[in-house]
Structures are given as structure tokens and as C-alpha cells.
Image 1 (cartoon, rainbow, N blue to C red):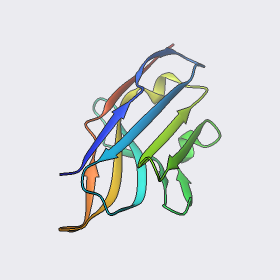
Image 2: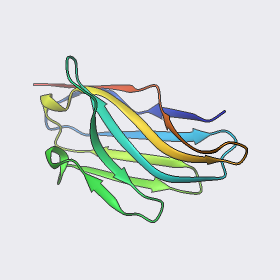
Image 3: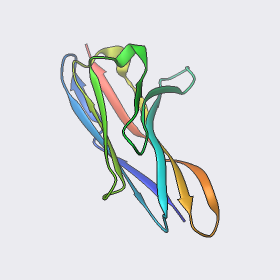
Image 4: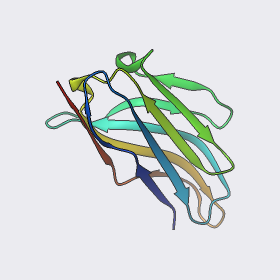
Length: 120
């Protein structure tokens, strides 16, 4: 069983910063793409940023220049540094990963989500 456990969410004032972490655990042979998505109340889940195993990065236009995604392959962990936060960044942030489980093959997994609230 593979689990993605997020941490680092919370309440912050506009202009502030937060750092999210997501650690993968379980019987994992390899992890390919890892990423962050978010879902605000009444809206669909949207991509925030993704990073491949080799470090190729993709950002949503709305977070370019403010957010930075990184990963530590040895720790099976992905991070999201969020700076210059805006009230419209308020959402539940979900970690996502493509994981190779030796007995099953490749599967896509989601974390349980962590709330980020940015006050005006």
C-alpha cells in the first residue's frame, strides 16, 4: 500500500509564505512525476505544479514566479514553497505521484489534502 502524506498547510496573511511537504511511503520501486494540485470551494481541482524524476518542472500560470516545486528522490518527498500568497490561493492542496509498485506496476496516487487559507 502506498501513502502520500502532506504537511505544512495553515493560515497565513496575504503576502506571506508557506512550505508544503509530501512524503511517499510503502513498497515503492520508483516514482516518476510528482506534483501539487489544489481545489477551492465550488471549483474543480486544478494543477499547481509538477516535477519529473529528472527535474523537469511545469507551473500553472497563476503561480509562476511565486511558487517553487522541488523534490528529494532519496526521501521520496516533494515540496512546494509558496511565496507572495494571495487570498485566491486559498484551497485544499493535494499531492499527486506516479508510483511504480513492484508487484502491481505503475499507479497514480493522491494525498489526503492539506488546507491553505490566505487572509486578506
